[in-house]
Image (cartoon, rainbow, N blue to C red):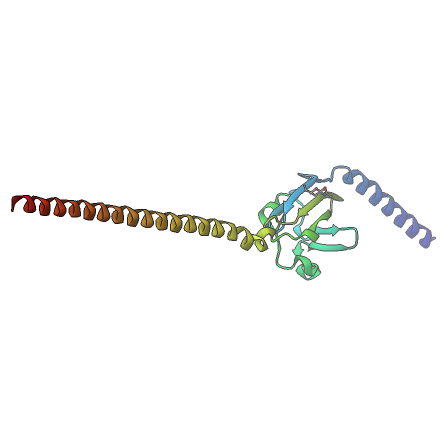
Length: 214
Ligand SMILES: *[C@@H]1O[C@H](CO)[C@@H](O)[C@H](O)[C@H]1NC(C)=O
């Protein structure tokens, strides 16, 4: 008899719990502010989720579990256990690269700043939030493309082009200088020659004059 009433009590409690959670769960939502993000390698990005808050709820009843799902693996990037960050759960790939905005978190916004992005950070990001008044999750996609500064290795060849261009203009300048020097030399030689020739004529003419005078 006492066992039966105990069982009834338990069933009642379970039913009450189910009805309560289903009633409250409908009001608890996790939304993303953006369903997909596009970024480049080494960029910093802010992934954001919003969840329903309740002013009288204890912060120790907050659980957050954020994961990255790719085709080959799933990694934890952010974990809050009983209202406290649990960095030891974080995967090595995200070590020191994920920061959560604590002020935003109190307002029901999970703002994760992910820095020094890598191409393998690309994938589906899922955050599950559990509170004493509900549980839900939200997802978004991130696509990290390789940085375009890869021509860094090609830069020397690019740089050699202006160099050869400079060399060409140097050759042109030298040739022009040489041509000018030759021209100036020829001109002065011509002037010298013609002067000399003229003077020779004068001397001959003077000599002739002397001859006639005598
Ligand atoms: C990622 O971005 C690149 C460049 O915009 C695009 O070509 C590619 O299709 C995107 N991939 C995914 C999975 O969205």
